[in-house]
Length: 292
Image: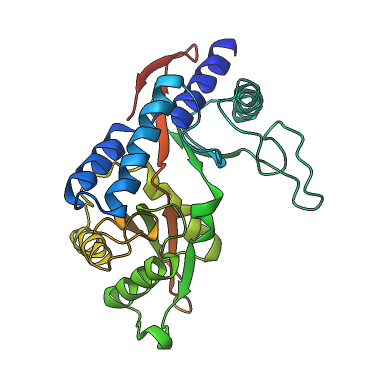
């Protein structure tokens, strides 16, 4: 388990300190599109310098290193109990090394024991498959962007949103409008259409595992993703709410089954510090390759 422990610590370090290339390229492209001398351009320049410094110094991109969310695609036979124990130890050691800030607290007392571990922290999602490959992906999701997530129940008379894709479009854009400068934009949306209240948010966060440049295999959802980004960027909210043409860097949408009585649209918001990384591990738990 020593190799697995070291691998998980390195995954945490890289996720915390280095923005994935697809996100970095989107930020650089957005900087080119903003008018020079504007507050929006200045905000993106600061973000770019932050990204460079964090990577060079191997330090957290943001002081809020967020909720620690592991997504594990495991072959049949993996000892999930042992893996979770190792993941928790990796979080503790990564916190000691400064890769994670001490920001997980007891919800009743507010006490911070400095380990980033406790009930529900870190969170691990295991998915078995019949292959032999072990894939571990990690998302560090800050509290500021988590605060502006939203869930809608359709129909929504106030927004004129019916139980169709246009209704989904209306509520997703309302979530962007309500967020305004909160959530450390420019942001990325992960959206789930359907499910129940709990699984809707779970599925919405899995959308953050997708690359920004990928194309949704469902044509209707692919078109909706593109329309949401274009319309949101025409709202003029901009980076950090300072105005400009970069409100969203991306929008990823999935649809899952629901019961007829319910029609939820769950919107998770990710800040510009889009901390997502992953690796394949060999039989000894060593990193065999990076996923992003």
